[in-house]
Image 1: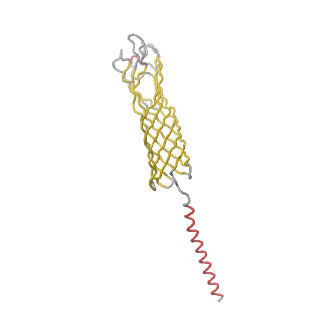
Image 2: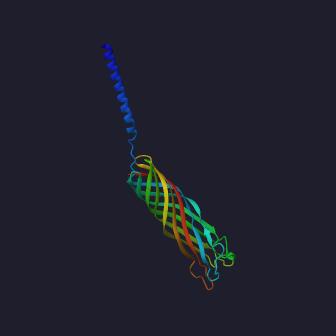
Image 3: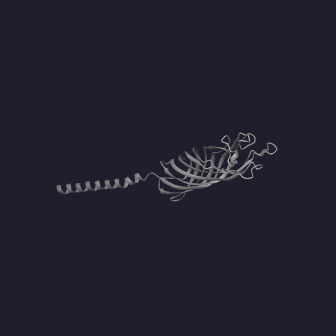
Length: 262
């Protein structure tokens, strides 16, 4: 009887130990999976990085009263790289278990200015390093749609496209003295225009917590071509200092950002 009681006690202890172990085995994965990754909702954030601007001008006429054709330097590049920062806000929706759609707006700024010596397209005999021309891309903005796929619960790979705006400054300075410079008289002109274009890009996001998301993003934007005539006013009989150029700009932007999801 004593042996039977001891055996029953041993079996009971074994079963209780096994049950507790099984219970712990069940609870462990449950504890590990308590974190959920809800990408839906409104968010705001900020980002910084670099913007490569690729402005280009093509002179179509120069001093038309005296020079029927432009000089050899008619096409000129003003490409440059600058620090860039922006703020953004958007809304995400789950459209399928692994697919996220959204819309996002942004506003950013960079100082992509480059000044070149000599007026582009000036006849060789009138070219001078004292004359200058510049193009500057400063603020930009965009409204874009987004579509992404969850490559893991906390990782979103996405593409984006939409409409973009950019403020482009451009100007020219001519010191005059027609015998050695492109212009008969001294001129200085500064202008700016806000251009509408399109943008495409993509990025990778990681949800650090229920509210914080970090991202790495690249975008390309194209703002088309516009035409401008510099120094349009006549300055005297036989003198015409006008020069006309087609100006276009494209940008490449890479940023690292962080947003807060409400």
